[in-house]
Length: 637
Image (cartoon, rainbow, N blue to C red; front, side, top):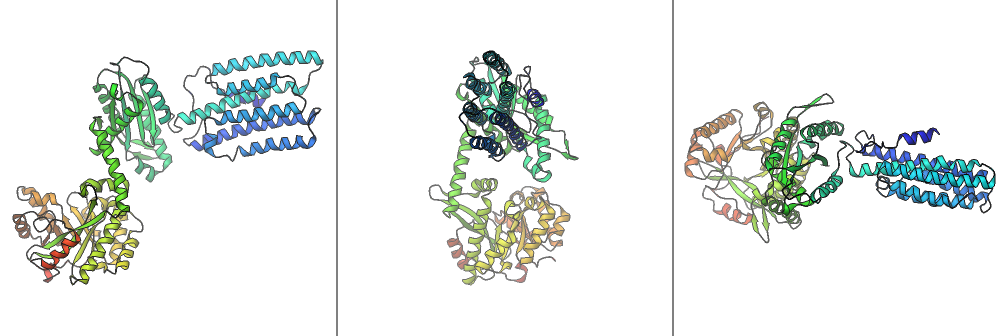
């Protein structure tokens, strides 16, 4: 009876209104393992009892060989329960299906062994299936009491008729009770895994959508509006990647605990994704109520979290959608809150935004653009435009910068500002960058073969490209394939992409420099570079950001910054190129400050390869490195 006592202890309390999650330790696989063990214990118990009845009772319709095959079949079923895929074990229908299988096997064995006793035995198993499907402890208790009373009465009549008490009859009572309890407990565990998050214990997306749908269709008055807050943790993936998933799970639990402290008892909170939470506010009097809660949540998350000896800071972006007759279903409300959350991220994170109708239109446009961008890569619609790099005093063209353009057959030429940020976010920028590099290097080789042998090529590298472990190998492969000397290629990186991990960047830059290519820092002055690392980095060129160039005629501060950059570059023996030059006045002022090189619309806008080929033939100042002052300095050792 110890097994029965243990099973009874596993029954959910009749006093509990909130189901208790199984002890998963933050891992769903542990809950699946627990269910496997439950199934195994149950099937083992069934096998033992039925084996006892088959072996020790007179068998009128079954042979010893069939007995052994039946017992071995039950044992095989036990073993299968330990190797079945987890998706079957956690399926909502699996406990019921196993109960049906046990019912068929057990009833058949008992019947053919001559121990059916009464037709109530089959009815008893049918009721066990009902117990398995029962939703509350009270329902299960009533069913168990009913069937135990009926079976006890039938057993009493059988004993009275035969005049003897058989152990095989008595053992059925604890057997059937244990089976019913195990099936019921397992069904509850499956429901918990199906509808609740094993890490935080909060309702998951499926359960939240179900609850939200019920709340929105319960016939509440129209003026009783609800607010949905969609919350995404900023930078959670970085914490997971650097400190591990165990610390990540601890952070999720701690965040969930802080969120609960901000809520009323009538509010509902759920975890919808890896780093996404949602809160449903009931009966709000005005949107300001939701805004105040969102701000309270942001303030609550400000203090650091101490996890496994690490001090972790986390912020959140929150989108808010208010229910109305037009967006009263669960799907629309979640979609709207999600769109508002993305707007909060775009505007700097650690903030909240209310939904407005234009957000869905923008989100749809972004989705369509992403789909079209995938196809554009397949159809080679990403083309390269070139902008000249000029020696300012002689107006000689010393090089070109390769710039990606999207030549869409329907919309025409799509500017990079519209698709490059999306490509960065989706990871497509890696394929785009490699395509641009290959096209530009092939075109430069063609220009060299045409006689412009001193022409340099600058190609931008995105932050994602720079993080590729095999970046140097890819670039070397492209250069070798095309037959282009590495010294003619200049790779442009932003300060931000270099300084995200300065030590790793230093190693990567040394590999690139070892190949013989040149390295430039693009948009210099707008990032957060350290002068110590700037001295250590093997860099050839600093490109002054266009914002300083465009402001220099009206802003003394911009002039001072440009002068400081030029002086620093001269001290470090680096080349300086000013971007965004649009007027002759800017050109003259830059020359006066000591800047030798520049690019911008004052000389030429970016043009196609065909147009650039024509410009090279007729460029007024000529093409190439002449005189010696026009040359880029040697790479610092």
